[in-house]
Structures are given as structure tokens and as C-alpha cells.
Length: 190
Ligand code: SAM
Image (cartoon, rainbow, N blue to C red):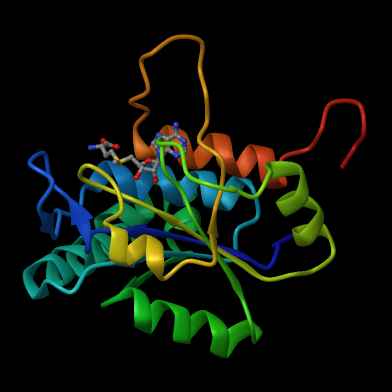
């Protein structure tokens, strides 16, 4: 069962350690782990956003290996998850692609930082259950640059732990957020 929910891992525009806007590098780890989380929670498509040509080529090589090459026979479950992954060159193209699929779509950005008026998880969960299409943007590097955030309609609240340490990997953040929005609630069967 799939929901009308897509996730995107944005490699540009993101911040680097110095706060400059850069394109970050695609990692194998992100593709595999986020694809598995997406498949587990019934996400429709996992978009990987990068405008950098050699990064796009790397993406194609990785996917090709696991979908059609030696990797496909080696690990069926990985292949199944990676069939959800698509390449996209910009956030503008991404928005247009998702809109073409579902019509008007709500785009929500994620961050570990505080933002004004984030949309509570419970409310977003209800919107999804009511059939509203949703696209969730995740950052790489040191997080989504302001222009990426500006392309969104709003923010999800930051995930909070117990202390000051607030440095989840994007892979962990995706899994936690998808569980909050799409995972089965204990004892409810839905
Ligand atoms: N190099 C890091 C890695 O290995 O994952 C990339 C860090 S990247 C800035 C982390 C991304 O995960 C953020 O842009 C955001 O999308 C998400 N994220 C991390 N911590 C979060 C939190 N506490 N709440 C919501 N999203 C979070």
C-alpha cells in the first residue's frame, strides 16, 4: 500500500560547514537506507535532487548496479526498495514532477532548528489520511539552504531528543518522521 507521500533528499541548495550554499555529494548509504525506509512506510517515490552532472552519473551507476547489474541478483530486498528512487535536477523540477502526478501538492521542509509555526505531525498525519498529496524535503551537508526552504509551504517541527545534542543523520531523521506520519500507532491497527 502506498500513500500520496514523496520524500526528496536535496543535495543542492544546501549549506556547508561555513554556511556557504553548495551542492553536496551523493552517498551510497543515504540512497540505500532512505529507500528502505520509504519502502517500509509506503512512500510513493524517493527523489534524489542534484544538478551536478558527475553526481547524476554516479547516481545512475549505483542504481544500475543494484537494479540491473550483479547487485540485483545478490540482494532482492534492496532492489525492491531502490525501485522507488528517481533522480531530479532541481527543486523546481521536483515540484513540477510531483504536481504532474498528483495535482496541487503540499511541500514541507525539515530541519533540526526551530522555525516559526511548524505544522504539527498529528495534523500532517490527518491530511495524509484524508488523501492530501505531500512532498517532504530533507537536507544534506549542513542542512537545506534558505532558498530550498523558501520553496516549501511550511516546516515540520524538529525532532527533539533529551539533551542539547541535536545532530541526527538524515537517514535517522527520515525514518523517525515517516514513522510519525505513516507508521502504525500502537494498539490502533492503523
Ligand atoms: N552529513 C549528515 C548525515 O550524514 O546525515 C547530513 C546532515 S543533514 C543536515 C540532516 C538532515 O536531516 C536535515 O537537513 C533534516 O532534513 C534532517 N534532520 C536532522 N535532524 C533533524 C531533526 N532533529 N528534526 C528534523 N529533521 C532533522
